[in-house]
Image (cartoon, rainbow, N blue to C red):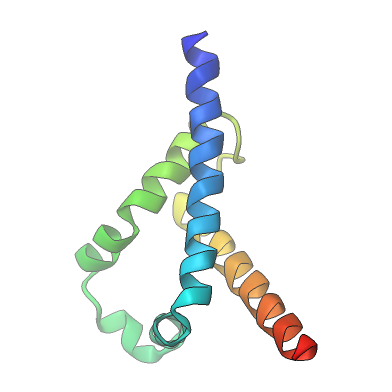
Length: 103
């Protein structure tokens, strides 16, 4: 029972974090685009690793928890974080494109 509840909680936390991140991006397009620019710029290497890890801490811990629960394949955590980030960016772009087409 406790293990089943933990698994449900992990799955729900991953889903909630994904949806929250996507909604945040849609509600804060300037900040989201700025973050994308920083991540893709050559200046990203100048950000101290400790600062990057602190900003990613919650997401990386959640990914680790999901891997331990069997929800995500066991691969390097940072790799999975990047895949999820790319997916969010793609969904974000799709939603924006659809909104523009409908106006």
